[in-house]
Image (cartoon, rainbow, N blue to C red):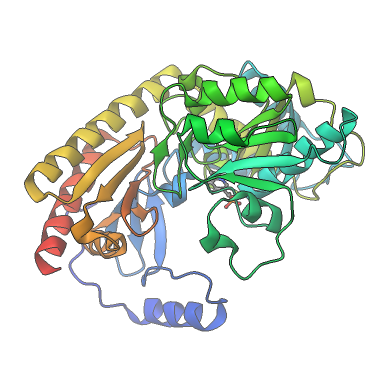
Amino acid sequence: MSDLPPKSHNLGALSAELVQKGKDYYLPNYKPREMILDHGKGARLWDLDGNEYIDLAAGIAVCSLGHQDPDLIAALEGQARKLWHTSNVFFTEPPVRLAEALVNSTAFAERVYLCNSGTEANEAAIKLVRKYAADQGKGPEKRNIISFGGSFHGRTLAAVTLTAQPKYQQGYEPLPGGFIYCDTFNDEAAIEALVDENTCAIFVEPVQGEGGVMPAKPGFLKHLRALCDKVGALLVVDEIQSGMGRTGYLYAFEEDGIQPDIMTLAKGLGGGIPIGAMLVGARAAQTFQFGSHGSTFGGNPIMAAVGLTALTKINHPSMLAGVKRKGEWLRAELNKINQELGLFKDIRGRGLMVGAELVDAYAGKANDFSEAARKAGVLMLVAGPNVLRFLPPLTITEEELKEGVSRLRLALATTKAGL
Ligand SMILES: *Cc1c(COP(=O)(O)O)cnc(C)c1O
């Protein structure tokens, strides 16, 4: 295991072939970095050409226990040798155990619906909040769902309509009706002006992820809770990115001192396998009845066995304390880099969900910095054109984090000099 940044980024023959085929055969809706990642261990990854990287992205907040976690491997292998899939026509043990553990992981939840992705969890929540209003005997006008500018809730037609960012919606019109946008996040007066008797739910990310790593300000979620209670609307927290220990709390909303009615989870819940969940509190726990909603793969025993193991490992005080400590250290280091290089106008986030917003002189250049970081041996993300985003595995060691930050500093300094 070398700590040296990779030296060459000329692709070997196999990497070059695979990159070319990826470009030829995939629909061009992604733009992957030009390398072929081959294997990982902890917070390190290697490409096919032997270059080594520190992982500050974790597959977009998914691989929270790093790569090749032995307990996740054991859960996957153990279940793979027993039973892969049955559909929801039959009970199996792993999803029942996972549902029980999820309900016990948070005070508000009474029941769980398991699915395969974040988008599916939000799609289920969109349907559930409307059916809840319908079941209450409310007229068809009480179906409005409010979300915030800068939010990201997924890519199905309803989830992308809930996502209050035009760039994700353009070209897909006509969009489903009944969605209302509060353009400014963290603006109490703006949301208050929009909530009325026709509101059936508010969806909120306690820390907006794709929208630039923007935490809810203190008291904002409490305000939303009160507004929902006033008009009989449900409060849905989308914790797909901020949940599962990412902020140093098992769920980010805990820091805001509220109880939601519904929470959606995915990403880190599976530690690397596709799984999503919707947790529902007392009010709406009976809204979905037999036949209301469903999924062939949802709660698949393999995914559930891995998810239960991930949840058990993450939901531990020492894990969460480590996330807080490492997150504070990372933000302090970014501040030091910034004193030297003057690149950022804001460094923000909670726990190991960290964003650094570029000063105006480098507006639009986030991707250049991120690509330079890769070439210096550190994988990271952006959140829009102006924000560098860091979501390392929660289990990253201090030594790995240090190495990652020192490579990052080098990449930022050389990129700045060349821009
Ligand atoms: C990633 C994400 C989603 C969508 O999840 P998928 O698994 O990609 O469908 C929804 N909401 C938030 C906050 C996310 O970060």
